[in-house]
Image (tube, rainbow, N blue to C red):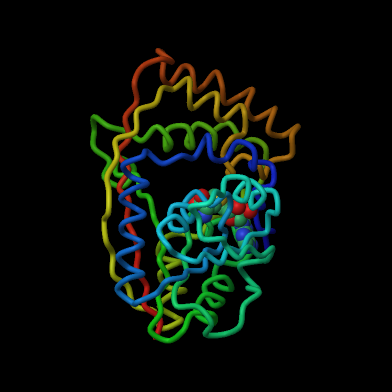
Length: 270
Ligand SMILES: C[S@@+](CC[C@H](N)C(=O)[O-])C[C@H]1O[C@@H](n2cnc3c(N)ncnc32)[C@H](O)[C@@H]1O
């Protein structure tokens, strides 16, 4: 089984590289507050709280956040950004697959970009089901890439293009990559816990980037998909990836657009 992916190495650049556009962040905050209000909850447990990118705005709106993360460095970055307007969070160093909380102790759990990083997704889902009170919810934010899911002849996802070229460069190296759970796997694990789903699409966003920006973020290993490789293997594969990538795009400063569909999955636990 793979280890969980700690974000210690990203603590100093996470917020600068993962910021949601202001309007999307505001819409997410409102969607989360509406779901908490629906079950009369004034607190939430965020599993994989990180720097509080998602939870800090909730703390400013009167919500008590309990945060768990395996990265002390990420939670230090969270603490540094707290001010007088935030309800003080209760932060715990801990693992999503063995949550440091009593059974049936929280009305709501929040998860954003975490289930693909844990050592066992089914165990993390079972822990959510254990700690949520009956009738409580898991609020699971999912960003879908519309151009990836609805491919048309004149559009392509920049992320998918670079992933395909990376896979081609990696192929001769006989390296088995970490497996990420598919949406269907996550849904099946939650359904096995008796959870039922409602989905709210709370925002769409057109991201504009360039091939050069994608190439730079790959070289700088900004995103967690690139951290699993030993440094020497990464350097070798990148050396093969870069020329293929440049040939694919030609003009490295051309504009790439990618439509992100932001959804909130609301899973009710019985
Ligand atoms: C992509 S970041 C997301 C942080 C935050 N949810 C957000 O959306 O900004 C993933 C976080 O999950 C944490 N993490 C990874 N595996 C974990 C585990 N098994 N238990 C708790 N936290 C974990 C990482 O350390 C990191 O802070």
